[in-house]
Amino acid sequence: MPKAYRTSITTHVEGKPHVYGYDLTKLAGAKSFSAAIYLVLKGEMPGAEAEKMLDAILTISIDHGVEPASVVAARNIYSGGSPVQAAVAGGILALGEYHGGAIEAAMENFAAYQDRGPEALIADFKAKDKRVAGFGHKLYERDPRTERLIELAREFGFEGKYVELAKGVEEALRQAQGKNLPLNIDGIIAALLLEMGFDSKVGKGIFIIARTPGLVAHVVEEATRGKPVRRLSEEDVEYDGPNPRDFDN
Ligand SMILES: CC(C)(COP(=O)(O)OP(=O)(O)OC[C@H]1O[C@@H](n2cnc3c(N)ncnc32)[C@H](O)[C@@H]1OP(=O)(O)O)[C@@H](O)C(=O)NCCC(=O)NCCS
Image 1 (cartoon, rainbow, N blue to C red):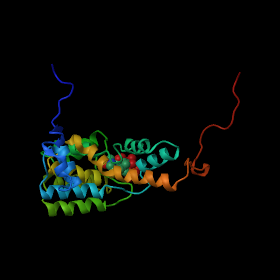
Image 2: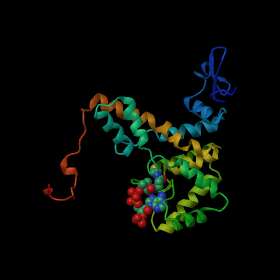
Image 3: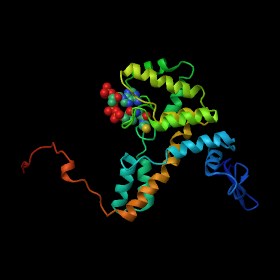
Image 4: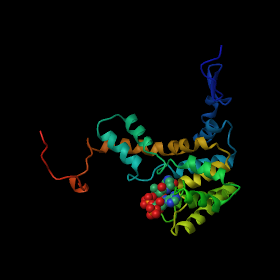
């Protein structure tokens, strides 16, 4: 009779939880949280350099201000009286393809165009009039987080063919669009996760893991310093619907 689930991630051995064969009670105190995240997502313990690279990715993504859609969503949900878990979950739901949710698609693109190169990628996307995941930013001409992660990738030995491709796509996109659409945090993380041998299906999860502490902090701040019910003022809103009118009876 087949079992309801088949998993290779976690089991109990002699009453102790083991993740991919490692006793969690021994990992705690011996390995970092980043190493444990790498283990649970990849099934193997990272080397020292991979651990530092993933740690840098997670650290640099932890928060990015009140302004992003996910934080506004989370704080507004809490201010309406919903519990912490609903507000944080609401923030995570706002991590879509334009905000924090572009890593998976960027990984798929970089993997698919590794052989054909940046010009082919841009030509295909331009022909379909599609945005290229991992490029462009509302704030930055050059994303300082990207620049720092490239520096660290060089130091830790992960500045390989996918980072080169991502930089090539940035340049090809600039030429095709006639404007600067910088390699953003999602794009460089995508290239680095490929360099580290991750499956593209971890892409969205990596950003969720990295940004959730920031979302929790914003919700806790809302809980401890905010007042119930955030509401825009009418001055923030432009109404362009019909003037008052009567209905026929
Ligand atoms: C992040 C993003 C929403 C920022 O957008 P923005 O700076 O406000 O730019 P706009 O949405 O106003 O777009 C301006 C123009 O640049 C184009 N553009 C923006 N990002 C583009 C991209 N990644 N690929 C191709 N064209 C892009 C738009 O199509 C638009 O063209 P148009 O003027 O001919 O209509 C946008 O760059 C994007 O969608 N990027 C892809 C998704 C992504 O990587 N998200 C993760 C962000 S960290």
